[in-house]
Picture 1 (cartoon, rainbow, N blue to C red):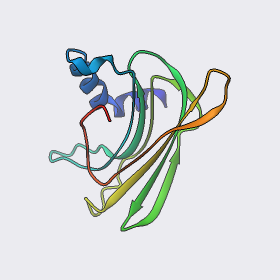
Picture 2: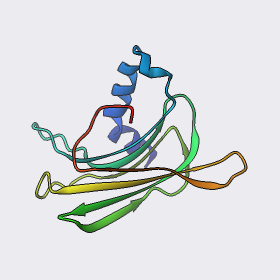
Picture 3: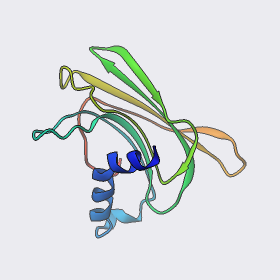
Length: 132
């Protein structure tokens, strides 16, 4: 399962790799959501919420809620994982492109092991720009 998460996150890895040559590379944590990511050519990035750490692994959890026409269709929960990339993604949400809204809840653990909501992200577009 970890391998498939890495493969699905390849666009993010490439983007961050390119960013390492820019002044933005000093940032360490990105948390964002994408919706309606179905570019031409058959690629399917779907709908997802991502917590991405550029230089370290961290214990994180992501809830990604996917709404179609304002009604929640499903929620993905990654569970707590010690990774540099935690991704709650639903590929094949491609019925009715540009009808989806994704709301992500990004949780981290503090140094004393307390859980906290680090960020809430929401979008209705396929935003590949980083960081937020």
